[in-house]
Amino acid sequence: MLSRRKLIQRLSTMPLLGGVLGGLPPLQTALGAPQAASRNLLKELGLRTFINAAGTYTAMTGSLMHDEVLETIGAASKEFVMLDDVQTKVGEKIAALTHAESAVVTAGCFSAMTLGLAGVLTGMDPKKAEQLPHLQGTGMKSEVIAQKGHNVGYNHALTNTGCKIVEVETIEDVEKAINANTALLWFLNIQADKGKITHEQWVALGKKHNIPTMIDIAADVPPVENLWKFNDMGFDLVCVSGGKAMRGPQSAGLLMGKKDLIAAARLSMPPRGSTIGRGMKVNKEEILGMYVALEKFVNTDHQKEWKMYEDRVATIAGAVKSVAGVTTETFAPPLGNHTPTLRIAWDPAKVQLTPKVLQENLRNGNPSIEIVSEPAGISLTAWMLKPGQEKIVAARLKEEFTKASV
Image (cartoon, rainbow, N blue to C red; front, side, top):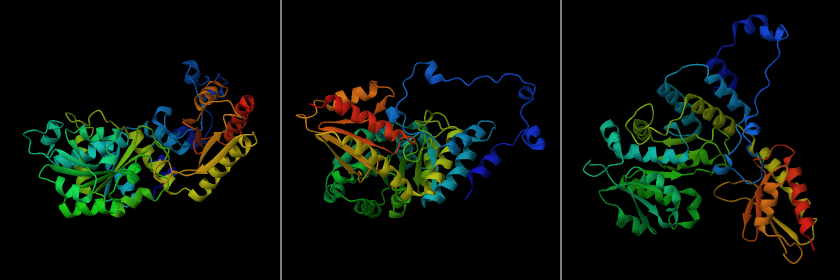
């Protein structure tokens, strides 16, 4: 496995002066020339920063990249390489880590879904890739089967190809719905409990009818095992976000799966033009940064990390429960955003505060804090907190509850 140190060494070489003279300071610095202060563009532009106790939401810019990822991005930005070569080499490493035949870095999970289905439709025919999303008269298939409970907004990534969604509820429905136009069987993992057909049954249906299966696991790591679980299970394509728990670039994702389908998907990806994926560009820095983020995530001590999150949540829970009428519940969502999560509720007769008002008070405070407002309370997570921020969140919540106490 390529270490971060070796990767950075391969991407760029140290300046000759530093390499020979043991890292002496630049000439201007040595002569006493003043160093220019780095710009704080967030402050300069008047942008609100906040403590993220909510989670890895796209609207909140996902997660914060690890230093190793940023170092890789910086080093990669100093050299030219061929984009396809980067995707191929990185794809091989990612595939090995995730038990897939092949992989490619995409412009997020949504992009992975569009490109994966595009590959299913076109095969290795570049002329067909240029015809998408216009399917009529092309000989390409035009239908994607999905369970009714899975047919939510994210399926727009699939209809981008020109396909339509056919809803089913039972295995018998699938058998009846399959026809000569069926291109794909699509499964949404976050909604697995909203459907009557299990993962294994879905894969078996695809194999029985020789129809590719795809699963969207956008925010469904941790657990880390999910990165290879569905490849091992037999799904032909697996799509996942890169800028959430893995803390890669927010604009990156992964498409993993069968070698022939990944190769076909790349026909609709940059650097090729005249395709529906041309605007889904991923630069070399993001590709390499995503690989380093994935490698770090796979090699993380997840038990130790989980305990850290539990401790942070416990700190917050302990503070708010000291206020009369406030109760807490700690849980971990089973399918997506699987991390220690704290739900806080209160007796309105003892604490005269609505969830929305509490959310706004925290947002408008100093420092600003983001949590999730729910009908009967609030919820928050600790995995996007920086060390020590759990104490700030705890103190602010306790302060707000205490002020509203009667």
